[in-house]
Length: 151
Image 1: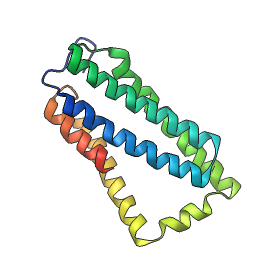
Image 2: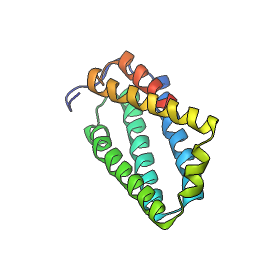
Image 3: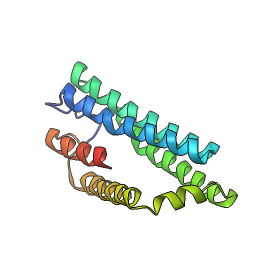
Image 4: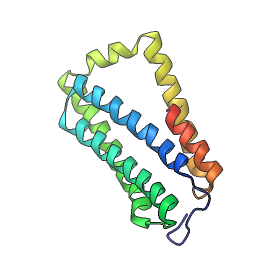
């Protein structure tokens, strides 16, 4: 993908489906922040959420206007890593301050472990998709967003 490519055959269904994992991530990180607290955790979640929604907006514009607003596409390459680094810092701070113990003990039950396994599997799928698939291809986008939703 580059700034001169306008993906063809993207649909509004694909653009809206792209919003599903972003919303799920936003809700999950909100509950996580409520349980653990911390400014870094909140900022990281917000940066990731906004970056994801801007990518959804990019797809909506591709569908409705047949334009590639390159900064909306490109920002995710910056926003997501920054957001995840802030989340990791938030976890480290929570661990140092002792606010992480209830979260960690909660993970040691079968259902949370199953969901953690599913999340890791979905994220691995997204990494593989990101390295192997063409982001301007409709079928590749559906595969990637399915992995993202599972994660």
